[in-house]
Every structure is written in structure tokens, then in C-alpha cells.
Length: 191
Image (cartoon, rainbow, N blue to C red; front, side):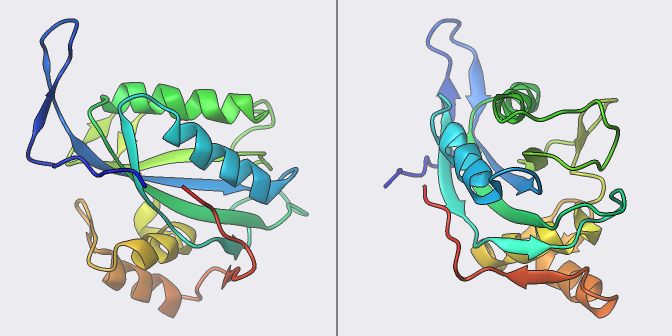
């Protein structure tokens, strides 16, 4: 079992002496191509193997209909990972992209195309960003049941920065049709 660092402690970089706050992060993972469950477990294991990353929870797995995807796209398996880290948002994003690449993510087919693995930063502490390649909090998380439902499972009192309580956001999304999301009791990811 991984020990959760105290969020009030500031970590010191041993080489530079630079101080880095420990931030609570929420990452959404998904796959609709290849061995979907294995891809998700690989993402969890890769995140756990990342220096200065402490996984604290992994949600149940959900199967979801693809949103805004090309016709004939396979359903996604989705989950949420909670972690604590002193890494910067940019470094965490680079790690997420490297993990996607390691699992054969192909970005040449355009947005929302089928993918072996998607690792999205939803929240990195209270960090806000609006860069071309990094937007925090995730710009569509508040309207995606496949992010909100698993996040609510592992952190029922969570709040999405700038949008409010996850429970309320989930209730709103589900009242608007629910986006075809089904809990997969037969699948479980391990820390």
C-alpha cells in the first residue's frame, strides 16, 4: 500500500533545493482500441512507477459509448486515478503523453478517433492553465459522465475547480441522458 504524502508538506528538490508543493491530481484514463482493460492497467502501473507520483485511488471501470467519435467506434473502458505529486503540471502532462505513446497511441487520425490509451489531466491541485496543449481544469470534464461517475466513486465529496461539486455535475449530466455509461463489475484495476 502506498503512503499518501501530507498535502500540507512542501517537498524539496534534493538537487536544486527548490520547493515544490504536493498537489492532489485527478487523471482520467480511457481505451477503445486493442486490449482495453490491459491498456488501462498499464496506465495505472506506469503512473505508479513514476518518481514523485503517489497513487492514492483507482476508480471502478466503466464502459461508455464514444462521445463525438467517428461512426463505428468501439465503446470505451474508462476509469479515474487519484494521485499526489510534487511534479509540475507540465511534467505530469509529458509523463501522460509518454505513457500513451508507450501503448501505441496514434494521433494521426484526428481528434476523437479510436485510441489504445488516453491519459487526461483533469485537475492538478488548484492549478489553472489555458495553453495550447494544457488546459486546467480539463475543459470538458464537467460534462463527461465517463469522468464524473468514476471520480465520484472514489471521492464522493470532490469538487471540480470552477464548476462545483462532482456529485451535482454528475446528476446534471445523467439527467441530460447519461451518455451511455455502464459500471463493469467484472473488471478491476489495481494499484
